[in-house]
Length: 141
Image: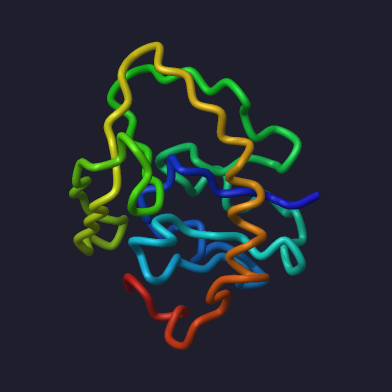
């Protein structure tokens, strides 16, 4: 089993900094891969990343929600072209570095999301996507 970062990720980067095996990578290009991704072949399932995420976007693979019910006010992001994800999120990560995600939406109270597809998106980032791209270690520092 591995851990999965879901569409609730707003690119804080704290998870990547605490990972002892450096298997968490920010998506690039951001419009196609808007959140951070965990390499399922490298993750040792230590769980250090879970409490570090201020967005509660990280789950063990078997606990990725198929019916996540929003409290209201949370943000979610998806790749460009995903219907309904056309609002820009603007914030800062825990280093105070500006974070902007153009393909986001703010969730309403009671809105339900099936995030199980995010498990496959994490794996595909490493098998079919850029994976460990040059310079990823210094991103957002």
